[in-house]
Image 1 (tube, helix red, strand yellow):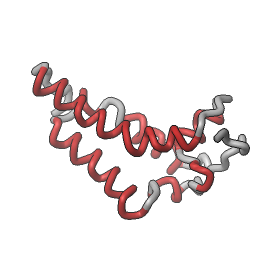
Image 2 (cartoon, one colour):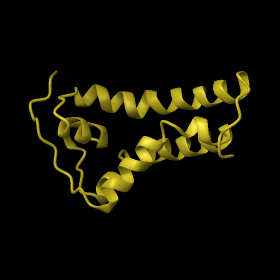
Image 3 (cartoon, helix red, strand yellow):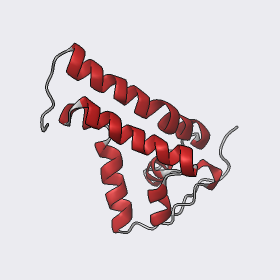
Image 4 (spheres, one colour):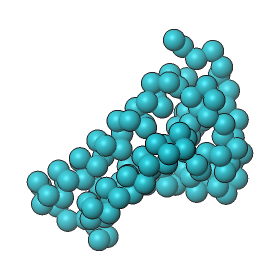
Amino acid sequence: MKNTSTTTHSETNFIFWFHLLITLSAWVLPFLFWWPLVWAVYAIVHLQFALFGRCLVNKMHNLNEEDNKILYTYVLEWLGFQPNRKKLKFFIRQVLYPVLAVFAIYWQVVLGIKPLIF
């Protein structure tokens, strides 16, 4: 089922930019920090989804998650893309963080590459 709505509303305030920064940093955590810390961060992210059914930071910059709107869909739609919101939300919330967590172990333990920071 395709999205019929093409607009997403969010306030682009300090919280939005902070949220974007921490969201993008999730992609590089396996390279920067020791894998147990990376796992803890990803676990906290998943815990908020499990306990609250939403990203708590989205609410802080008025991004309503109805119609499967998340930060990724907001940014992609702002850039002119029309992602399938439901599939993207599923991928981000159910696939991405576990894959990054496994990658952190592969990168640091299997390949033996030390994190850049600690």
